[in-house]
Length: 247
Image (tube, rainbow, N blue to C red; front, top):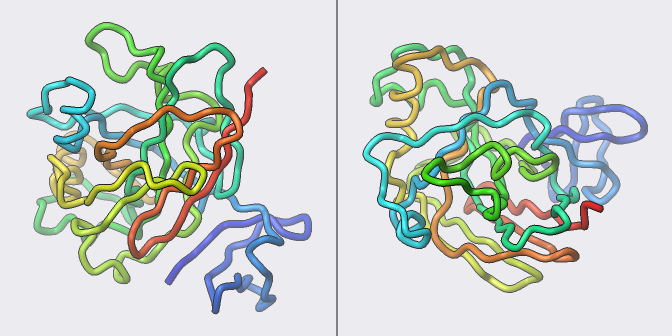
């Protein structure tokens, strides 16, 4: 099942996809263009993976990590489907990153990899923009690279875990103004989803609505004001947003 959080008629609603439309909890059917899309989950702790695809590490001239390279993201970064992302005025390189987002469904502590999928509520899409200008020395990524307001669209749907047969065999694509610019597969993750849950839960408790952003494959490109960017993941949907100037 595909689930969403939306704003409609002055209120916030939970909705499910039904025949190309959205069915609200009270039974009303509304068209997708009639609503304001919100992040499908209100994230608690958000873990983001750097360099979790070997081709992406090579693309950036970094050595692939031998242990997950994890950083945290604040709630200020998240916006929904069809939202606007602000590009800082003087930056040279601000690129998209299409990522599979894993949403935790219940508390997880010291989970073994063979049990990891039991703790997942579902999956969604994130486009975790990076402002490459702010990269400093060896530390990747620093706070300004990955924690800008509006720079992580997420959604549009939260797809139930049971409806994704193999999350480690999904195609990821990004389109800029309709042109395919990035394509990869979750098969190429260095640390797969069970490994990430086992690793993170080995030293801290993962809680319901925590989110793991699992990294991006190669194929990154700078974006410009006015660009329409679509991040697509097989079986989950298409996440669209527009780049605007941050004056």
